[in-house]
Amino acid sequence: MKKEKKKKIIQKLKNRYRLIIYNDSTFQTVWSTKLTRMNVFVIGGMGSLLLIFLTVLIIAYTPIREFIPGYPSGDVRDLIVRNAIMVDSLEQQLHLRDNYFDKIKLLVEGGVPEEPDYMADTMERPVEVAMHAYNHDSVFRQNLLEEQLGLSLQQSETKQTSLAQVHFFTPLKGLVSQKFDKNIDHFAVDIVGLPNARISAVLAGTVVFAGWTVETGYVIYLQHDNNLISVYKHNSELLKKVGEQVQAGEVIAFMGNTGELTTGPHLHFELWHKGTPLDPMQYIDF
Image 1 (cartoon, rainbow, N blue to C red):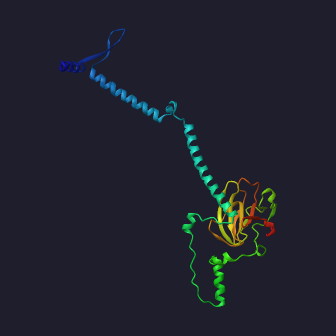
Image 2: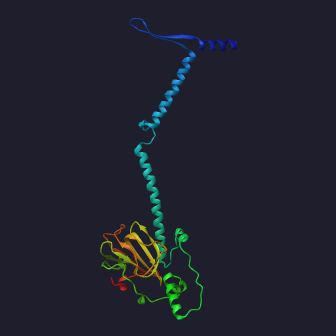
Image 3: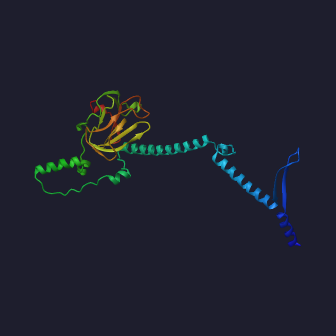
């Protein structure tokens, strides 16, 4: 019985039929074709697959996909990308700000910030100097050479000079627009000079910070002997990098108007001794 039913089903699928289209008015045959049930199933299945494929293409590569509930529009996708970029930039700025504040805190406490990793890999190591017997002239030349190359580290650590005997170079010749005032937490003097005026180091020292901050723009910090630190803010351009040695009177930056806490081109100059702010006008003639 089962075999007979299967044969009947197969026979029905193979039975031929004719599809005829007549003219309703004249009953004349317009078009006709021979079909089987198997052909109808195959043609219908292929047509369905083609329709699904075309629908997927239209939705994937045309703006019609934005009408699908829950699918973000072009503006929303652009906003997501911009927000991701902004969040990444904010994280970087927060990291730089925290690093800057940590260095400021360490400087105010009288310490020296550690050198960055990229500077530690590239900076030259101190040269070991072999000691020999010299005459007085040779000793004089050797001491002078050690001073220029910064090799007399033990002497610089033990030598303490009174601030009254220290000769400070003027960082910028100009007009003092705002003086040192502890009452308003202005631990600096603001000096107005000519446009793009050169800013010089007040003493020989080492650059311990040189970079950008949102509030004070381009900033550079110098560590000097006798636990002195000089600060130069709102510069338009920095000429030195962290770890570089500078000489007294050497140009380290150009005066500018960078940062949020400025109302015009000037130099914000600070002088610190053992974590205590000093009035620069008591030591430097501007």
